[in-house]
Each structure stands twice: as structure tokens, then as C-alpha cells.
Amino acid sequence: MVRLLAPVLLVGCLFSAALGVSISSLLKSRDDNLPARVPYVFPAPGTDPIADKIRSRRTNGTLLDLDGALLNAPLIASGWDALFSAIRDNSTLPGDMRELFILRIAVVNNAAYEWIQHESVGRSEGLTLDQLLAIRFAPPFLKGNEANYTSILGGPLTAAILFADWITKSVHVPDEVFDRLAQFLNDQQMVEATATAGGYNFVSRFVVALNVDGKMDVPVPVPE
Image (cartoon, rainbow, N blue to C red; front, side, top):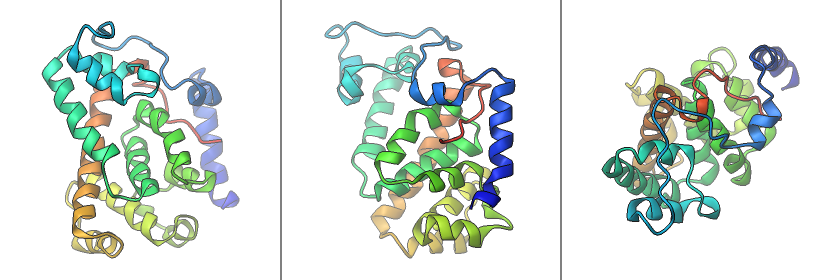
């Protein structure tokens, strides 16, 4: 595992250093309140029912920069909150698989903000450092190294990372990729998996296009 990841780990660290970005500082600060391409809208508690509903889902009741961007369009923010409450908070997917989908899509789409928000969640759901490094550095579709990554991720998460890569990079998911994941999930969970992968592609495109928290050109952090 160390030999497999060492070259790309070094490249990731050098890339971050070249941009003057401290990986550890990125991971410690999940929201830096750096400007986006639209102003953040943060209504005071008790003054906006949509913002208060979103706030009720957030840690310590604190709105994220993502929320501040969304609240420029309140109905979009409300619909977004309802959709991702279902996808993230009320799914029957295994937690480690759900977070793998989110983190892998962040890698493929170079959405540092999405990774920063979810790396700690992935760890809390049981993803190990080796698994996070695999998610961060595995080549698209695991080409050339599938056996090595399977030994790290296990069967279900390997099937999930392949599903995430196909739905993100190709949109068209081959039958064999779908069926491989379906060995581990029931029909409801396959719908949840597809909604999660599709939904967080939506998230990554939104946060990158609007440069939420100033992270558009920041490389996805390297887990430590």
C-alpha cells in the first residue's frame, strides 16, 4: 500500500505546497468564509424560516458557506435541504459507502470544498486512512490496480468506487458495474446509491462553479 501510494502522495503534497495551501490547515478548518462568486446570505436566527430549517441540520446550528450561497435563491435552498436531508440523513446505505461516494466524486471533480466537508464524516463512519488514501489517489476506474485497491477497500466499497467513477465520468453505467454493486445492496439501496452519486455530482458542480469558500482552484487535500 505504501509503495502504491507514495508517488502520488508526494505529488499531492508538492501541489498543495506550490499553491501555498497547508493540507492540515484545510482539514482543521472546514469553512474559511472566503468569498464566493455570489455574496453569502446569512439571515439572523429566527428571521427566516428556510434558513432556520437548514440551520437545524447543521452542527451547532451554524450555516455553512454553501448554505449562504444557496440562500441567494431561497426556494432552491429549501429544495436542496429537503433533497440532501433524504440522501444524507435518511438513507439506508452503509455510512462508509455513502461517504465513499461523496469523497470519490469530490476527487474526480476536483471539488476540494466537498472533500473538506466530508473527510471527517467519512472517518466517523469507519473509513480508515488507507481507504481514504485509496479514494483520493486511485486511478479512474481503478485501471491497472484493481486487485491492490480491492485488498484495501473490500468488495462492497470497491464496487461502490467503480460505480462512482462511471456515473461521474461517463454518466452511462455499464450493466456489469451496476450489477456488481447490486450484489451488496437491495433495490431501495441501489436507488439511494444512484441518488447519492448523482446528487453529490450536483453539489460538486455547484460549489466549484460558484467558487464556494474560495476553494475552486484548491487541490483536494491529502488525508493524513
